[in-house]
Image 1 (cartoon, rainbow, N blue to C red):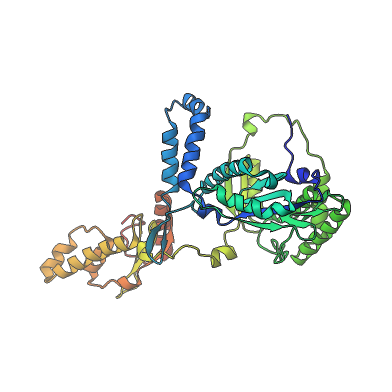
Image 2: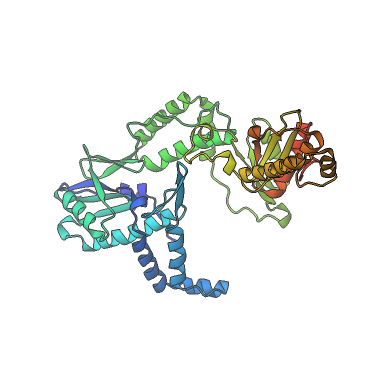
Length: 442
């Protein structure tokens, strides 16, 4: 089987004529400018012509048509809703940022667009090299063809949604993705690692609360990028010096680089025997990382053929970045909550999968209604013998106390119903002095 070459390997072999220039084009806001109606037309045309849908229907016992696929895709791409300052909005054009379907839709449209652009490009501005990654394009074109080619690209999209900008090589150099392409005098090129002017060499700090293998993974990534991109040995030595300096700035000791280089130099073993069924992995679990503890738990799980990954449970991103509108506590669902009494130290602990505000209103409505109806001792005695829906109402009737509704608050969140019940029971135990009838579900 022919091994596919990476971009760096392909670029090394190109030769640029004296009258040509390296140029790059970039799409302005690709995702949010992708014309969904055009994407759906392209998908329908391709699905109708290709055989994979028929094969899929036969293997799965389905009867999907091209129209079914397009209808499903249209529903996904055209029902993007979000909230801002308490109001609900719908995105009316383009693909949503962050949606897993958006890259697929954008790339389908870009494939169609580039095929049309290259096929219809005038001879005088036809690119001699065209390499695209999503919305970044690298070309080799005639020096005087950059502007005509840009004008042509901006006319191919009949919806006029997609617009291209361009950047020419400067002093024989042009960046493309994380590669800096440098043109030699003979027209050949060499490759370096590209860093933006704003790059700060800030990587995962060695003192941060992460497992060691993740920190060594940072070292391996940088060294691996150096080996795959940089073409000349002297430049590789310079790049390694930059890497070591950046890592030292982030607190990495020298042995980290030596350890990773030694491991990378060791050839991987091939042809391992297939494991018996008893030795196959029994599952996968993600552990919150606690230094010195998570590693031991992972080793124990490994002895039972359970693979464990580790994830930081607290990060600066979690603490500082909140891209979504903050939900009001009253609108929160799947919560454990507490409601204190004004006249004593007892607190009610409850849980609900519905909105916290709705459940709070139900508690308050019943308690207020019963308290209002208690006018005489006879009424109170009759009410005490009645089984009420909530233990809060029992507390009001039995003790003639007032509930501090203003201090009601959420003490925990859990989406799984059964786990939420367990957490409610644990919270009751920890609270100690409660007005609950038992250890949960009242």
